[in-house]
Image (tube, rainbow, N blue to C red; front, side, top):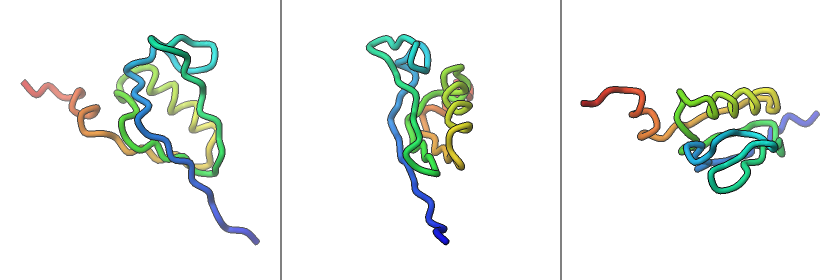
Length: 86
């Protein structure tokens, strides 16, 4: 029995530069293709985007349906936007 899980690591997507997520969508600079599974586990390791943004929610929804597990590690400045620091 093989109990080994594989991990796919992605970071620095910076969704704030995109207008939408998916193959038929437009990016401010070019198209952002959907993340395709190459492993059991996906780790989104920082600088993905703002959690309150629709693109972020679209991406998380999409990858959650494609991978067995999804781990999200946020970057500090994306979380800071959620709070009024002034």
